[in-house]
Figure 1: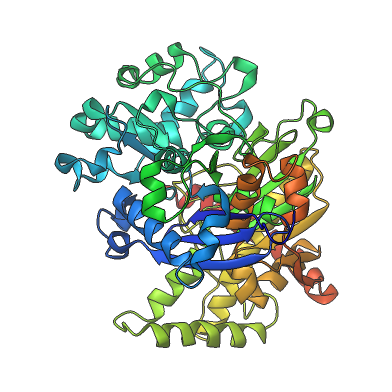
Figure 2: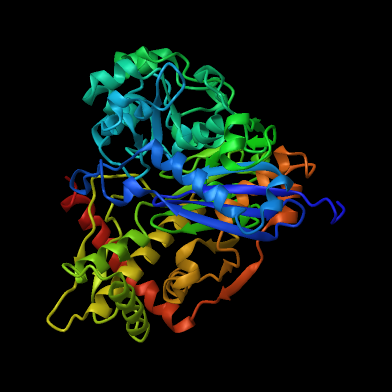
Length: 543
């Protein structure tokens, strides 16, 4: 491509607190600009109740923040807007939301604007624990196909069907008004493409396979019998809810004239099929077969890809699914993760700064704790913790378990407790790696991305020591948006395949962490203690 006619793509990364619009060269992946806009309603805590684990987001937050973020990309360089040939989208998930018969998000209708049940049910919402348990009981009863086979054998309250059933039971008005439900990552591309007929929304293979129980082996979504036995309420929705989900390198549509005007872009450019942030983050990091790409943020999402011919009949139990083409076309995508990672440290910060609203002091506190904790030996002075502050995602999803902090004594200091929390998330990482390898899926390399690897050497080094493996931290701070841009460039025809786009646009490596032999030996002993602690926690903290 001649430098006189450069091609640009936009990666939209919808996180838990904000949306990031990032401009990339479609040819070599150079990052040319970024714009970050927080969700204003979400920041107030509206429609959320942490005590009951209810977390809902208003679709207006998503649409308004997206508009402001994309327009903000081009304020300093307006000429770049005309060079954009495609948009890619990644979002949190599973974060479904209901749509009305007119194809608009239900929460955009005045009568539902303040109803939390009509909003986007964020990934970390755990109000559907009972419904998830019902799905597991039914699937494991022998009365129907076990539709949990390819999602690790355990359906989670964080996922699509459990959340929909919970809302429909809790709110008959929403159940009656909902013409369909759609994942956040599928909704945004449909909005951009101006799709108002909800039956025409292109669903992505990523969300369908990992959260909605879609799989080719049973011909798509679970059968009608499954929904009827689970709860006939679900048959008020179209059946099947969707068919033929596509990989993220496909087109979800073309940018509509309305949204082109709103965003300051050219109508008709490609809008790629959406996927979850962690899956696209792995692509932005350049994931290769048997790499474990760890997106380390408020929670973690761990992504591994492998050739289906080598996976064969292996099923990894207790993870968040193994789905063909869910990360990259032609490969089986595996997902695992921890329900809380950065959230653990955010909780500790809130605990120590209760009553102090100065964010500068809070940030200084965490930096001071990190420095002091790094000077302590493995295990601190005997403190130990479990990382289940928001339940457990993998291995073996269980949103009823709670975190435990033990080994405390009068000599326990704030840095020692902080180190115990760092070790807790590292031990949770090892449990995931052990599960993959014990089931026959090799982990050859670990790649870390997200905010925490960029900011916390202690966390990454502790993970390397606990795992006894080197960890490579990617250089790009925007790997999720970068992955979205890879698929935007593919959908726009800038590269022959998603693999070719990935190789051209992937991030480099910022730093490699190698295990410290002395710490490795210490953590091998401490991990045995952690496993005993975890067994106790499983029986004593479920509620």
